[in-house]
Length: 263
Image (cartoon, rainbow, N blue to C red; front, side, top):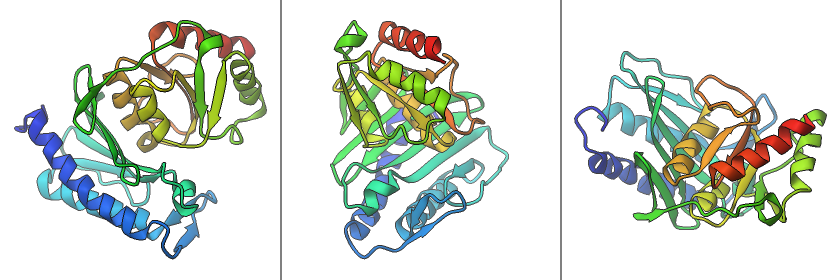
């Protein structure tokens, strides 16, 4: 529960925000490209900025004492113990290329406890939400991770291995050679698919807390496991984190051992 809101009331609040931001994303999708590069050479669009502004305004109106951390705008530090994390368009490269597997991410922490996460993929009509213990839903229906027992039977996803350093790339290659099938691309959508039982493993590098904290809640709510490549919990002050998500504790341990042996 967040302040005086029940989980259902809170989910309704988030759903209304995402209905609005989804319209913004789709209005600009496959339309004229208004693209620029940030200081790290990553792309950003007007839709990124507009979506984050809408989410921030909604939060500030509803919870004026909460802090906000977003990808595109300056952090808002406030007096409350609650802190929001916003990635307005996760998968901007997919978005500008006309691919549908981009999403909006929202996470919420109370102190050091992660209490909410959302993956919204408006072009695909799928929205994963978790604001309860041990519960993740997609479009209101409960989902659960489904895992194979062995690495050699696993389907693994990564957005891109191009950002790995050489040492981490070798470790990733060792894991990739151990699984049955690997698929690339899709950014946050992979985590929704893992939560829904379609993917077994994800190994990749993510940039900042707004990229990974919402995903943590979605995966854990569906019964999966997500850590860094050393097996450590993902917290809200890390940058450029190597993430390992798995559909079960047992499969996660097998993948972790494979990565650590190669590093």
